[in-house]
Length: 113
Length: 112
Image (cartoon, rainbow over all chains, first blue to last red):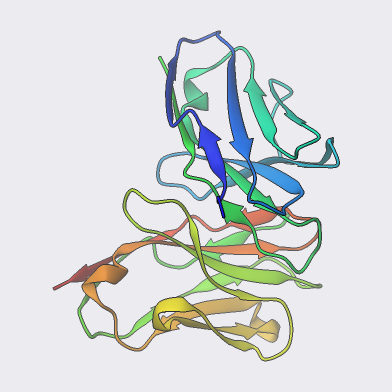
């Protein structure tokens, strides 16, 4: 049973460029959430997708957008990259319910130069 | 605003010492509570969770946590740490939907 898988594992981009990160949820899960983890901090919630719609959003600018596909996989897109976007981006999958736990992928390390 | 506070950012212990990591959250209502662990080079893994019922919950690897509603706390404990417990520990709270709010993390180093 595959857990949460993310690709790529590492990425280097230049300021102003755009990036797309991908996530496949754990088998049986229908909800994908994205988090940004800056160095020395806890993960910060970006947004959550369920039934191909954005359900909740954290305090991130519109440069951050996402998508969920019919097979529950998801993409995170970041436009007009800034140096401050350098971080570990985590994908978490779960069921869409209060009393459930989230499973995390290994993350994508994004470096903006 | 919803927030989670972890009391110590760095903790250094000798093997066999007891561990307690503090976690407080900003306000009440119905909450789900979690402790996650991140071993060096690995992904976040769930140590234990609280949804309802007995406020003392047991997790993997001998860890336990106690939910004290009146104090908005969910402290993590282990009676005797091992060198292999060296990792970063995150407390996380879910108030609604599936959004997790994390604390800043506690880096635990266990000296052998």
